[in-house]
Image (tube, rainbow over the protein chains, first blue to last red):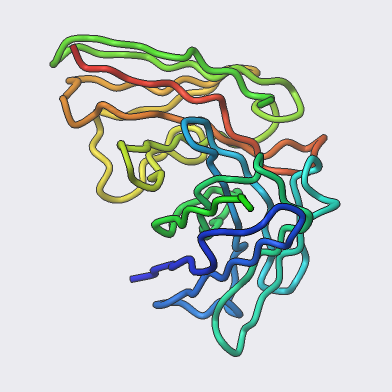
Length: 118
Length: 110
């Protein structure tokens, strides 16, 4: 059974870089699929940040593209998110997920809350 | 601001049915598959419907999906208290080259 688990700092200072990792178990990332990040500000809806294919190709939300990097570490079977120059507007629960077939987010991690504050 | 629009809320009594709409455009719903996600309070979203009308294993047939033109609909029949949740549609947007979610609909069971 495939499972995803997010990890990283729960508090990030404004203007710094938010860094999160998603550890995957039960499936080898290098075998296929896209792997993505989604976020949800408190009390608000879902926003797709971007995804990475197991081959390394990426696609990012245009509104975040200048600040986002998603990468894969196949040796550790995990993928990562870096979001630079954060502000309070980046405070959210961050989810990692596997995209199947027609870019459906079929399997989700439990999410991790990240607060941007000094 | 999402490119997919959903009504903010819908409510019905137990046992009744509800329909949740998702409106988009030719660059997203009109030419791509639609999925639906259920988010129970305090939990991660869960896939309910994919490829417009397919249900993953374990999802009861009380949940159904359909698509027509640039709109999609999630139907829930035999409403249960456990169905109280936020529901989101989602699809690929070919113009943005990005996955987009709807604004979300809160379902309340009266």
